[in-house]
Amino acid sequence: MKTQIGYFASIEQYRPMDALEQAVRAENDGFDSIWVDDHFHPWYHTNAQAGQAWAWMGAALQATKKAFFSTCITCPIMRYNPAVVAQTFATLRQMYPGRVGIAVGAGEALNEVPVTGEWPSVPVRQDMTVEAIEVMRKLWESNEPVSFKGKYYTLDNAFLYTKPDDEVPLYFSGMGPKGAQLAGKYGDHLMTVSAEPSVLKTVTIPNFEKGAREAGKDPSKMERAMLVWYAVDPDYEKAVEALRFWSGCLVPSMFKYRVCNAKEVELHANLVGHDMMKGNFMIATDAEGMIKEIERFKAAGITHFCLGNSSPDVNAGIDIFKEVIPAVKD
Ligand SMILES: C[C@H](OP(=O)(O)OC[C@@H](O)[C@@H](O)[C@@H](O)CN1c2cc(O)ccc2Cc2c1[nH]c(=O)[nH]c2=O)C(=O)N[C@@H](CCC(=O)N[C@@H](CCC(=O)O)C(=O)O)C(=O)O
Ligand SMILES: CCCCCC(=O)CC
Image: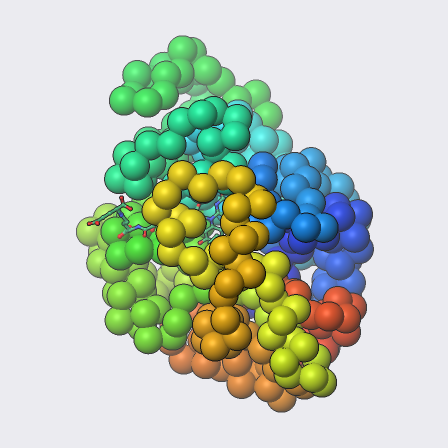
């Protein structure tokens, strides 16, 4: 499978219009795809944003010409009703044929708790995600009104009047072994996030392949996408520190507990050391260093990169890819 290089235009880290300008620049520099975070509260408090992802996608699709777009990722189970998620992405894909996908996952307390007050366990949220996908696919595929009574969701003669000519490709996020297996079974492609190459090779990807085979699919035809943050700067330590905004994502308890306050996440994020950041993010002083970083994850099985740019000079962090992309594409 051919390697694809995507740009993660963060509307948590950057103002929506700045992220849109980054997306246009990234497309012009040769990125294949643009991904956007779907958040209610952000992963840091100071100078953070949290724009609405679908509103941003409509504007960014219109401002670009050919790049593929997807959220990275949408949780379709609580603050959003899956039928409305299906309607939104069907509309976008009809308007921009071939250019729109969706990535889904079991959610984060940061986004679901502030507006629902609910936070079910991981296994329950994974089960809800699987049922939400069933709801979305029924609506995308049916030529007749759909009635459905599931464990979590109900459709009563629901019909999508606005549909694309083909189905919306669905990436399923799996961070843990069970999540990865579900991704293979119920997703069209895998999405994962900042995992170490050894974990990808021995846990995430084998479980994803197992799930795909259980569903009778050929995993070699499915993408393995990964969101990973990077910073490029001639001063290596400055590049590491520029990734501070995302260091809360490296704290496992942020996923286990009901942490929904960005100020609290920031307190934990500020305690993460440079060693941990160096192991989990891509850090380089020049194009050659970035090429090596991408090759490291390609060797572990990643085929589609969603690269979150946290470089001190954001535009330089995009333009360096004019040199990187031709070198890493097969
Ligand atoms: C927590 C793990 O669950 P998993 O289903 O594998 O992954 C969950 C993630 O997909 C979501 O949280 C996702 O919504 C996060 N996310 C995101 C993910 C991604 O790959 C790329 C980009 C993004 C950006 C983004 C996200 N979410 C948003 O809402 N918006 C965004 O923009 C996990 O570890 N699962 C394990 C099982 C863990 C478990 O059950 N633990 C139990 C204890 C078990 C025990 O002790 O025995 C517990 O914690 O209670 C697994 O194997 O699946
Ligand atoms: C390990 C981090 C997973 C979540 C990342 C996220 O929500 C940022 C967009």
